[in-house]
Length: 205
Picture 1 (cartoon, rainbow, N blue to C red):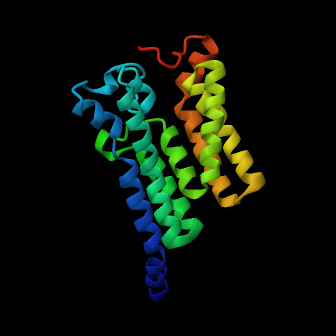
Picture 2 (cartoon, one colour; picture 1 turned 90 degrees about the vertical axis):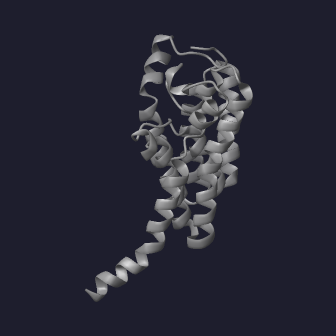
C-alpha cells in the first residue's frame, strides 16, 4: 500500500498536467467567436468543423485568424508550462492532452476540430523551430495546391521525420502520434482530394 501511495504521489504532477492540458485544449474558440460575432453555429456550414479553415468560410478573415491563433495557443501554453515545471516529459503530456482536448472537447459531446492549429501550437511550445517548419511547409504546399487539408497533411509528415533526425526523440514520437491522428481525422478530406471535390482555400461551402 505504501508503494502504491508513493506511486500515486509521484504520478500526480503528470496527471495534473494532463487534466489542465485537456481543459485548455477543449475550449472551442471557433464556435465561441462565431457565435459572439452573430454568425451562428459554425458547425452548420462547410465541413462542420470548429477550426479556422471552416470559420474562414463565414467570410470573416479576422475571426478565422483569431481562431487559428487561439487554437494554437491552447496547445502552446500547456506545453510550455509542462516543460517549465516537469521537463520534456511534462511538456509532451500536457501538449498531447491539449491536442486531444481540441479533438474531443467534453463541452461539445467529444466532437471537436481536426487538431492542426493545436498541433502547431504544441510544436511551438516544445520546439519552436518545428512550429516554424510546420508553417513553412503548410504555406509552400498551400501556395502550390490551394488545399488547406493537403497542406496540413504534408506538414504532419515532415515534422516527425525532421524532429527525429535533428532533435528530441520524445517530441518526435509525440509528433508522429499526433500526425497519425490528424490523418485519421482528415479521412473525408483525403477522399475528396482523391476525387477532386475538396474545397480550396477561400471557397465557401
